[in-house]
Amino acid sequence: MEIKAPKPQIPPAVWTEFKDLQEWEKLHQERPEGDKHSALFESLTEGIFNFPGGFVVTTLADGFLNWARKSSVWPVTFGLACCAIEMMATFASRFDVERLGMVPWASPRHSDLMIVSGTVTIKMAPMLKRIYDQMPDPKWAVSMGSCANSGGPFRHGYHVVKGVDRVIPVDVYVPGCPPPPDALLYGLLKLQEQISHFRKTGQRAAPTEKTD
Amino acid sequence: MLTHTQARPLIQERLGIAASGEGPLLLVEAPPDQWLALGRLAKAELGCGYLSFVSAVDWKEQGLEVVARVENLEAGFALMMKCKLGAGETRCPSLVPVWRGADWMERECYDMFGVRFEGHPDLRRILLPHDWEGYPLLKSYAVDTPHPPYR
Image 1 (cartoon, chains in turn red, green):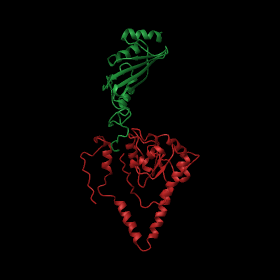
Image 2 (image 1 turned 30 degrees about the vertical axis):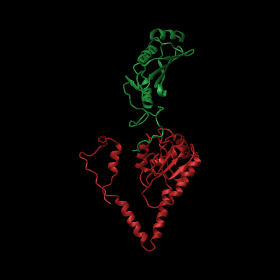
Image 3 (image 1 turned 90 degrees about the vertical axis):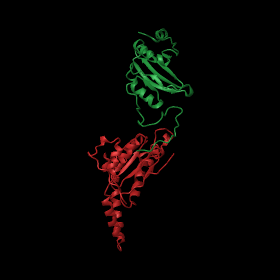
Image 4 (image 1 turned 120 degrees about the vertical axis):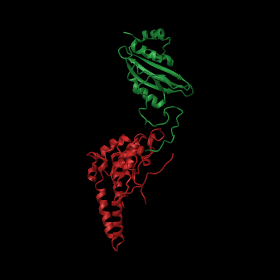
C-alpha cells in the first residue's frame, strides 16, 4: 500500500496559516512512512502464533494485556449536559469507580475511555471528535444517556446530532434520561467485560454512515 | 414621577400611536420607520431604562414581527413594543443606539429569524456555527433538513 508523502511546507506550517485547524491536524495525522511499530508488532505476533505450540504464548499474553487494560481504564473528564452530574456522582465517593481502576483524568492524551455524557450539538461535534482523536489507541467510548444514544428528546430538533455514533465509534450504550450512577456503573462493568475479550491493539471501527 | 396614565397621552402626542394594554403594561405597535423614535422616547422621556428582551414572531404570510419589552423600574410600568415588518421584509432598525443591552439579543434574533437589524455594530450569528444555513425558528424551516457532515 502506497501512502503519499505530504507536500513539504516552506516555510514550516503553523496553524494560523491554515483556514481551518482541522486541515492542520489532518496534515499531521498522515504518516508518510506508515505505522512501522504496529507492523513490526503484528509480524512478530504472527510469527509466534504460527510456531508449533506458540498460540499458548500469544493467548496468555493477550489475556495478561487485556487484564492490564481493563484494570486501568482512565476516562477523560468530559461532561456535556445533565448526564455529567450523574457521571460526577459515579466518580465520587459513594459509587467510587476508583475501585474498578478508573481515574477521571483531565487530559485526553493519557486517557483510554471517553464517556459522552449528554447532548451532542452540531456545533460541539467537531470538538468532541478532536478530543477523541487526541486519545491514544486503544481507546473506547461509552455513550451515556438518551441524547448521546440517539438524540433523545431533541432528535427532531434542528441542532442536535442524532446519536454520537455518527461522530465516533461507540462500544457501550447506557440508556436513561439521565442514567443513574448504578446504570453507568453497570455500563462500565460491561465495558470491562468487553475489553477482556479485546484482540489486537489499535484498529477501531469507523462510525456508521447514516443519512437521514 | 411619570406614571403609566401619563405615559399613554405622551406617546399619543409625540408619535400619534394609541397605546393599548391594561394597567401598567402598555402595548405599543409602531411601524418600522417609527421604531427607533419610539425607543428614544421610551428611554429619554418615559424613563424606561431597563430593556427586558428583544425577540421576534413569525406570522407566516404576514411576515415577521419584532417584539421588545422595556421597563421603568422606578415608576413600575412596562412598555411592550411591537413592530410588524411586513411580508417578505427582514430589515428593521436596531435598538443598540438606545440600549446597549440590545446587542446580543438582536444578534440572537438575527441568528434564529434572520432579521437584519440596520445600525447594529456587529451583526453575526451568536449561538449557531457561522457556516449554518437557514434560520431555524422560522416556520418555513424544515427541521429534518440534513446538515453537512461533521468536520
